[in-house]
Length: 219
Picture: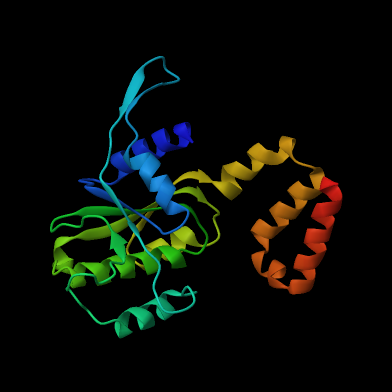
């Protein structure tokens, strides 16, 4: 965790010009953004030198109230459009933490698949800016940073929404190869197939077969 926090801290500061604040995506992104945002100190580098890590202010999103978690950006927009903009005391904030005019934000999460959840987070931030009376045009929300890009449409989704995706590890390109020697050959073959054919594994019968086989391999 310490190493991941350091390298993520470096990545966002190097790739997001003028960065003022990280915004973690609810659940997995919350402890991650706290670790990255508060990372302070030096780490020994491969060239024998030291690179400092610098704390970055952070906030994080909260879940939308009133039912299931939205599965698509369109569902999220529908929910947000129905919410009453109320600036009064006690109103539940959808972003926990400070947002300011002139902020340059970077959305942060553990991984991305098709970019949908990151777009939902952007919509939540935009709602909260409006609720707090901050002009949308005064805040940049153009960047997303993740530890793992599963390379299943995330970069394409970012481009289509005029955003930039930064990832520490590209799973299909690098990550899966690093795991091969540590896994049973059937597990490795299964994960590789899933990466290349994710829709195949939406079938409940195939999911059941995979679970049964995984249990047998693990004893």
